[in-house]
Amino acid sequence: MTEIHADGLSGRVYSSNRPAASTLEPVYVLVHGIGVSHRYFSRLHHLLAKTATVHSLDLPGFGGTPTPGRQLSIEDYGEFIRLALLQLGITSCVLVGHSMGAQFVVEAAHKSPHLVDQLVLMGPVTDVRRRNLLRQGWDLTLDSLLTETPKTNWLVVSDYVRCGPRWYFTELPVMLRYPIEDRLAMLGTPVLVLRGAQDLVASHTWCKQLAGLAPAGRLVEIPGCGHVVHYKAPDQVARALARFAASRQRTGS
Image (cartoon, rainbow, N blue to C red; front, side, top):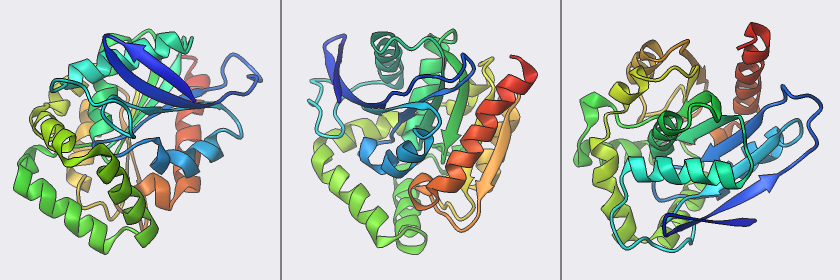
């Protein structure tokens, strides 16, 4: 574990470093969503680390890191990720964000396009047709009850407790007002949108829309999974990410 300090903010990174077999071997950076931490990436991190270098972040205010003294914008988090990449010595990566983390990585890609080769948005929020607190809360509740396993729910809820309601509800309005669809359309980075086929938070229609807006965008859906697709089906998600990363080698881009 490495502490990351930047612009008066503190976070952490958990890394699995391995000697690269070639300069084309991917480096994955995994970025969590609101309220949670690197812990729900553990299964995916372990699988990806068999063939690549992997870094899982805990962003400021989450995962037991110090709570910032002010509300942070998506741009603030994007800048923190940029500085974290530089501190880690990363010169190119596949940047992966889940849920609100998809917003964070889109903004990070705007701030550091030279460091981000490819972008993965898993269960991206917030659907423009459901961009209000009551609808998001209802969708998340239904997803937890109907599609997630008890172990997944325990992991997420225990991280919510660590985050605390004050910081969660401080950042929730930031999530709801971020226009990810507009920011995504302005990027030049290849994008994979990935969702669980039963995800009640990030719908098929919404994810298809985002994939259509993104340059070289593509959509992958994992059957039998809800919003936290990477914890329930890490093997399938890892394969999808590896295929996406390999596509850069085939195109030479």
